[in-house]
Length: 395
Image (tube, rainbow, N blue to C red; front, top):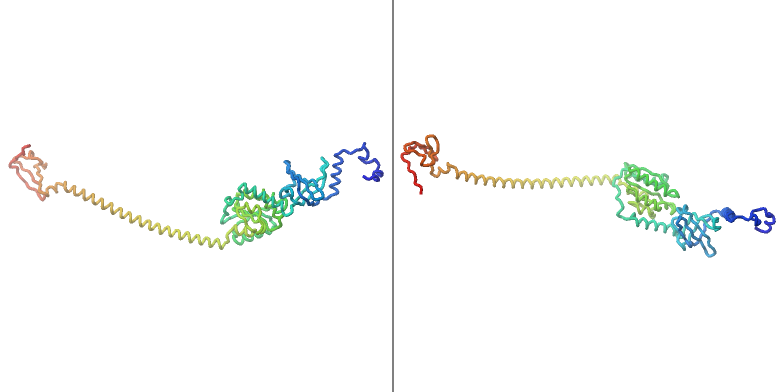
């Protein structure tokens, strides 16, 4: 304070005399209020030095140029607005408020937003996110799921007011009018977009009625598309139980969500085309399947007829062989029986004698001299009389 002002005010204000000396805290808090009131939030350009990420979540560093440097801090609550932590030596522009850290009396710049020259911070953020997702296997081609060929219900996560939704619905109605389209609205840019996109993905998963999911938005600037590069959004999409198509921006734009989705479409219209088959294409496919099915059925019927004919021929041959073998066995048995038959024996000149009571006289001892008997021959019968019986002497 100048001597003129001191003389004008005298010792009536705090700190004017040793008796009214200010506490240090009062001084630093007064300096804080004066400094914050004198400077509106501004953008500052400089080189990052002495960057430290504290365990409490805050970032501390300095910004410097050829003439001076200033201490900076990014509170943990503000980090979500910054794509990635800066590296030492990186040229950045930082937006924030000049203030005094009253507890230590240090002047510092509280950073709310930050951008690096040459897109360094965003490129670093993308590389870090991609490396973490890749380490967890979320970018592996083998985890990509096949899309349903004929989905009945498609969930679309996008802004309800954007052109992307109009393009998707128009293509779906033209190609497959019978498909049901359910919109799950979410902000696709701005600070609330990551939270709303994650919430929409959770709603779709809990719904359990969608056969396919399309997530995306139309074209825009780098900042407009950034929500689809957020790691938590990508992880929520990768965890979705529904096969997914990501369509973010224009064909030249590739987001982290594009990398984890089951299919990446260059535009929302292309996503709708990939989701369903054209009605004419479907009809042609059904006709092709019908022809293939008919041909396969006729082929199998022809093969079955040939197989049946072969079996019948084989059965006939086998039956005839069994009949011939049975006939041969029967003839052999008949021959044996014929050879053992009494009639066959008599046909060779033998005869059978029977007594008056009809009993067979098979031994000379059965004959009685002077007794009548009957002699059976092959072709008739002879009545006879036993005039004499001569027994053969045993040797």
